[in-house]
Amino acid sequence: MLRALLTPRWLGALALATLYAVLALQLGQWQYGRHVAKVERNERISAHYTAAAVPVESVLGTTAMPIGADWTHVTASGSFLPQSLLVRGRTVEGNVGYEVLAPLRLGSGAVVLIDRGWIPLGERGARDIPRYAPAPQGPVTLTGWIRPGERSRGAGATPGQLASIDLVEAAAALDVPLLGGYVQLESLSSDRTIASAGEVPVVPLGKPDRSLGTHQAYAYQWWLTLPLGFVLVILGIRREVQPQHSADALASRRRTSRIWDDEDE
Image 1 (cartoon, rainbow, N blue to C red):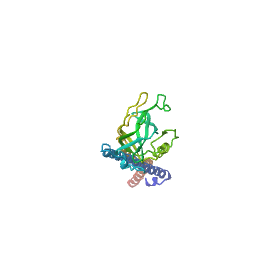
Image 2 (image 1 turned 90 degrees about the vertical axis):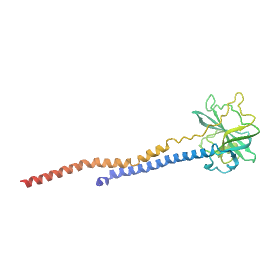
Image 3 (image 1 turned 120 degrees about the vertical axis):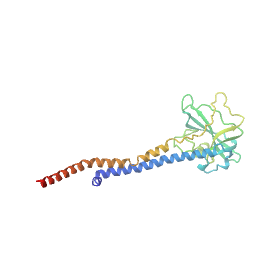
Image 4 (image 1 turned 135 degrees about the vertical axis):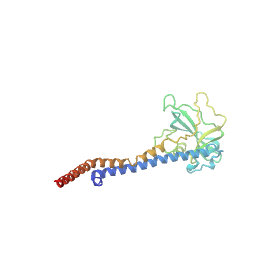
């Protein structure tokens, strides 16, 4: 088998088996890393989601928020600016719509982006934006959870719309500097929280997804198939050399039989 393995054909097969093993190892590590990230996310949610709300500026600054602060329960007081943004392609319970963003100027003068919630598409599809309840005017106090900005999706910008909650793009669209995280709205105290006739209500987003998915199972599957290529190489070589080995054994028995026959004579 060793002599067969050293032939160009089987050395090539061995190289492919090694390449697959490295690939399976890396894909398994990638899937397991995603599983670990979701476990850590759930730990942050458990620690922060129902905790007492703290002032938003005690957590957020002008730089990007640390991931360890994700889902911190916060409170904020200020007044909404007149601008607003829509984030397109957002799904709630299988329905596609928009998330409504509004900048809130705090008492300190800093501005934090508030995700007010979700509205559905208009009756004529994505180009039909329904009229929705605007952010209330005057001083308000709200509670919510801080979230990190999302990655830019690099899609072409439609005025007043974003493809993701990228804080740099949102600040440019609003023409105002923003704190380094946004707030997903929980509750809002104001004189006007219900949509008027003809307006679509802005529905606050639901509880965070805590599912772990199948990443851990996929990781184990990749790792279990890691030696598959080497097993196939070994079986292939054995299948190739077995007939030759059987032929050599048969020839050896025949030679031995002739020797004994000659001695008997």
